[in-house]
Image (cartoon, rainbow, N blue to C red; front, side, top):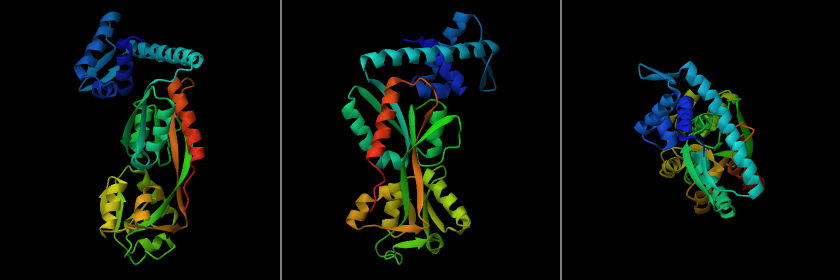
Length: 303
């Protein structure tokens, strides 16, 4: 319903990039440029200064951006108000999650939500925790679910559940019969870790520091980008690791890996992160309500 030219301009102004705006809007860059020029012709003034491959808002652009914010806020209020009366829950939702959550928590949550609200189309973006927070900050996704602390105070963060991390070794490893081990003991063995920016990696680094240890004491022989890749490497006897216990259900049942509690216990939050707008899309509100209830009904699995 809202003026397409204004929507495109607003997105470019948020990113200060035609390329990023085109990606977010699923448009070609020439199409984005055309829409912005159409709006500039309408106002008979430039809305962006373009210098040295960078853009910035002109004074007129800043004025239009401010009004566009108010227009889209009112638009969302109107849409939510009508949908509350009709009870309609439909549209497109873009959800982002860090790798562990996307692979092991969200499939069942989003599947149950889709059964209840079949008219909602859900798109899932997967990245590490830093990437998901950045997408929320830039309004690329409606809701993020991350596995690390969120430092941006301008975003709303809600606890979903507490996740337990454990040491993971192959069945023939010298530590495989231990019930609980101190972190110091893990330093004696080759270690496989997640990539930089991973929430799991950040939590483990913080855990090391709180135990009076340094990351240089880890004998890191490999960095991999997903829990599945890491589990395969551990099964192959390449090294040991620390992972969320939620990722190990199949391997523990088959006996291909062994999980050992850390001493002290290592836990972290799985959290929802979203913008703090008072008026969000009605469908986003329904997903948040559903997700909160889902996490309450499906607490952290125990042994």
